[in-house]
Image (cartoon, rainbow, N blue to C red; front, side):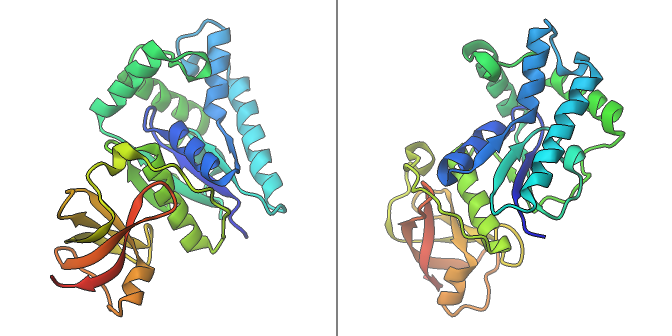
Amino acid sequence: MATNVIGIFGKTCSAKSDVAREISRMTGNKVKHPGEMITTRARMAGLTTGRDVAEKWHRQIDEDTVRAADALADLDELWIIESGMLDAVLGSRDDVFWVALHARDDVREARWHKRKEEMGGRSRQIGESVAQRDDDDAALRERLYGTSPGGVEPAMTIDTSDRSPTECAAEILAAFQSETGVVLSVARAEMDKTAARGIVPGPSSGVIRSYTPQRPPFGGYITDDTSGKDLYVHKSAVVDAGVAGLEAGQRVTYSIVEDGFGGFKASGLAVGE
């Protein structure tokens, strides 16, 4: 079965919505936010938590999400769907490219307060704290699905704590296209100057942090000597260099080039100084 959905799940304030919207912006494909419908329903009813929204609304939104995913099975169209409990709603479907997002508690708390105090509309948080939301979500998941987190095996897991939505979206798209063979028409993203600060195009060197060519991210990361930041290297760059493989701690030289997704990657790889 063709992969028609990029499914993103994770705890509250793990940047699910921001990353999903960034993928949508880059590709022009639609994004669906089931959880925001529950937040809106809670706000309309004067509730402080989605846990107290009537079960019939949760079930209806879940059914709409499943129908949307089913409708895509026969269409040459990709959707991005994000929700904290999406893994329980869609289960282990073979037409979903699963992505799990997480972040440190202090980062999630900061994001929570920003959305609580500064944002409006459906983007504004309900509830009192991240801890309360985690407890409410755990209880709601148990009530609705009788399952705990981990119902599906994600194709990739990303820590968004110190990474921008643009950078995370670029990594997801690169892995999605590499694993599924689906070629997306990706609009050139504006360079994320904050995430790229200190990274300068041109010759450089660094140390391999990790390399997993057979699974996401279908390549690896180099800790760049000059910027101190992690730089992505796709497995194709390793093949082009005539290198059998890479190991953590190995020193490499390369050229830093723009990746077309608003960030940078390593190209022209060579092992050694």
